[in-house]
Each structure stands twice: as structure tokens, then as C-alpha cells.
Amino acid sequence: MLKKLKFIFVLLVLFLVPSVSHAQEEQLYNEFVVVDFPVSNTTVNTAGDYRIEMVAVAKPATETGSDAVINWLGLYAGSSSPTFNAFMHAGLYVTSDGVQWFAAAAPYQNTAPPVVCLAGTEVWPNPSGLTTGCLSDVGDLGINVNTWIRLQIVTYGNGFWIVRIANPGTQTKIDVARIYNPNTYLTVSKIVMEESWYGTAPGQNPWYPANFYDVDFKYRRDFYWAQWPSNIGGNYGSNNIRENSYSGADVCPAHYGVNNYVQGNPYLWYMGTGGSKCSGLLYTGGGPATEATSIVGEYSGKFMSSENGQTCILTNRTWPGPWEEWNVIHLGINVRAYRGNNAKYITRRSTNDLWAEAADTGSNNARFDYVEIQSLVFRLRNKGNGLYVDHYNGLACTSADKGTFNNQTVFRYVAF
Amino acid sequence: MKRKYWYLIVILVVVVGLLLPLVLRAQPPDERVPPLPPYPGSDVERPPLPPEQRPTPTPNHIEAQSLPKVTPPVIPTVEMIDTAPDVSRWDKYEIVIQRGKSGKKVYILVPVGVELEDVLNEHLNPAEGDKVLVVAPAVGKGKLDFIESMEKGQ
Image 1 (tube, each protein chain N blue to C red):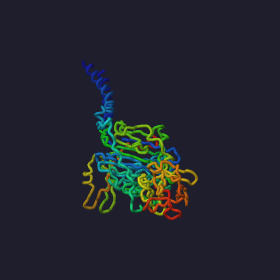
Image 2: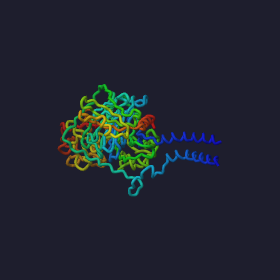
Image 3: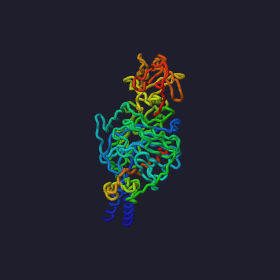
Image 4: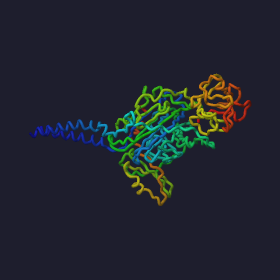
């Protein structure tokens, strides 16, 4: 009897020791909060041009070499076989040193598509010695904590995708990487907040402060940018917010989560520490109803600004921010109205100056004849006084006061 | 007496064996997770407000745009020095060094936890113009699993 008991005892010890040591293994772990964007809409999955604006609001006190909090846009373009040759992602890497942008295929993978860095440094080589990503210096392009960036991943169908990063604050925009994936069909799209940390799971996770905002995840549709349609539930039925943990931890809402409808804006959300939403829809809306484009003087190259309705409209910007995007309203054959970021329509005052201040398009002063010169290039003639719109090269109010043509009466739609 | 003693040991070992995994997985929240600082009216931390999106300033130049090139380049392989071949690649960060003499880039793979300075003392020769280009964090196997799950629609 005693021998049997000893045998059972030894078996139990042998069983327990490995399981305990595995649980205490030190390694790098990854925790995720994810927003899944549906790609079943044909207009979306064939657009080939996607952009989002993101910002890191704080930096955590991380250990060098492993720990970071990251905000990234991840896309799969093309077939799923072999798996990793379709993946690409880019975003912001935040450590105690500061903020770095990155653009990469699947890290370390031999099957990852070739990546060429046009800026930053080649990193994350695979076993064959081919690098799979690009990483910037801290603060490159003037990107730091509280710096909004515009991240664009676009293909023009010539065999690769371009990762383009802009800092609207400094009006710097550069192509930072090419990812050689010839597929143009989008199969997966996600915005991810990630924490990577080194230690023993589950107890040693430092749960670094992670504070990211994301806004205006858009796709290009002709010469418009449109908000991503998010009301069809993505790949998760009625949910497109979720968590994922490599360590098995309860990530959301205990540590990280999403806050949506920030400042009442459906297209502005928070990911990170203190976010409380772990499931459900990010927003309802998006799609063609949100199409917006910029209007540029054909010969001046300057963008038309709503001035948020605070002054007359000026066509003098070289960078199209939110104030320089317009919803185009079709009111009939070649009759248009334009709604600015302040939800007001362009209208003509008695002085003929144009202002973004009309509540609706009922008045002829808020309606314009669209006189096409060629595709996307046009003149506008106000229905109220029958005069053409002149942008005065941005040196004076854009006004409907010309009875004849000149170079300053020619405009173009540009989805910049 | 001896038999009772052995029974007691076996019962104890069985009970510990059953409970240990549960204890490891479900430690009390206050031990596993440091409490989040409260904010008025709630028990979770309030995220900071987003920086305001400012109106576009009037610039005085037209940005030059460069068009993408169509010809795919030949991508060279890089030289790697693996300081710990036994450690998983997922748990190693990399220090990218440019040699002063040859201009070549060298990738030093270092296990997380090994001090950066120790590695630089061994591999960097500032007198010859060597310089650190960037330190790239380790990625973590969990990221690969996550990327894989993305394609499967999870």
C-alpha cells in the first residue's frame, strides 16, 4: 500500500513541476484592444486608399528593448494563402523615450512581402536577413506626444502599397515605406491598441499607461474621402470592438478599453487606459453619406477653407485639414451646394463674399451652377446673382462677383 | 500510524495540485493588478482629453509631391549578430549599428533584459565612427498569433 502511495506521490510531483514552471516562464507578452472594421462593402474593399489620424497623448515609463504601447492600422490585402504575404501595418510606437512611427509587414516572417524603407531604419530582419519593417527615430517628422499624424496606406496598382505619414501641424507629408504586395483587394482591416511587456504572466504585467485617440478612418471613393461604414457589424456580427490577450489576462475593461463618440463625434474614439467599452459597435454611420473632398484653386494650388464660418471663405491653404473638406450636395443637374466642417453651407452675402454660414440650401445664394471644364475641374456660378466665383488667389475673400472668366475662377476637386 | 501519515500527505498533495493552477490563474485583483486611480464620480481612470485639432495655418509655400517609383528594387540582406541563439527571436530586441569604416549596417539581436550599454560596450567602436541607428523593440510571439488570427477573421 505504501509503495502505491509513493508512486502516486511521485507522479503528482512530476505532473505539477512542469506546469508551474511554464506558468512562471519569463517572455514577451502582447495584449490588445481591437476595433474591427468591416470590409464586405465592395466600394471599401476595392478602394486601395485608406487613411486615419491618430495621436499618442502620453508616454509610459517602459523598459528598453521590449516594452511599449502601440497604436496601429492593420490591413490584409489579397488572398489568405500563404498567410503572411498579405499583411501590413503601420502606426505609432510609444516608449519612455518618446514616439516613433513604424511601417511593417509581418515581423520576422520569411513569407512576409519585401519592405523598402523610404525613411527611418530597416528593422526586424527575418532569418534570411531581409528586413520586414521600418522604424523611425524618436520625434522624427516632429512627431511627439500630442502630435496628430495622418497615416495613409495606399496602392496605385503598381505592385506595392505605400505607407505615407503626415504631420499636419508642420505640413510635412512623406512616403515612409513600400510594401511589395501586388494585391489590391482588402480582406481585413483593424485599428489596434497593443501593449507589449516582458515578464511572467499573468501577475507581472505593468499595464503601462496607453492613451491613444483615433479619428476619421476613411477610404477613398473617386475624388472623395468617406468615413468607413461601421454599422454593418464587421466580421463579428453586431460587434466590432473586442480584446485579445496573449498572457490570458482580462484586458478590458480592467485595464484597457475603448471610449467611443468622444466629444459627440462618432468618428473620434479613444483606445487605452481607462477605456470602458469592450464590445459592441464603435459607431453607426459612415459610407457615402459622409463623402467629403477638398476644393483647390486650379492655378493657385491653394485649398478653400470654411474658416469654420468665422470669417469669409479664403482659398489660401496648402494643407487640407478638417476645415478644408466639403460635402458636395447634388441639387439637380449641374447644381451644387457645399457643406463645410461646421455643418453650414456656403452662401453669398449681399457684398458677394462667400461664407460657410447657411443652415440649409433653400436660398439661391447657397446654390451654385457647376460648370464643368473637364473631369473634376470646374467653375461655380452663384444662382442668386448669376456671377462666377473668384478665389482672388487667397488674398481676399472668395466671392461670387465675376461676370467673365479668368484663371482665378477655375477650381478642382482633390481628395488630398 | 505510518499509513495515516502517508494518507495525509497524499491528500495534501492532491488538494494542492488541484488548487495551485487555479490560484496561479486567479490571484486576487489587488495583487495581480494595481488599482486604477479613481476620478470624480467613477472608479476607473479618465483618459486625458485629445489635443485640439487646430485650424490649418496659412503656409507660404506649395508642398512638393514625389511620385512613387514603379520599378521594384533588389533588396539586400542584412548582417546579424545573434548574442543568444538559444533565446526565442520573439524575445530579442535589436540594436542597429552602422560601422564607421565600411558604412555597413549590423543588426545585433539581444535578449530582453540584457542591458543596452553592456552590448554597446562589446560591439560598438565609437573611435572608428560606429554609431547606433535605432533600437528596435522585440515584437513578441503573441503579435504573430494575433496577426494570424486576423486573417482567420477572429
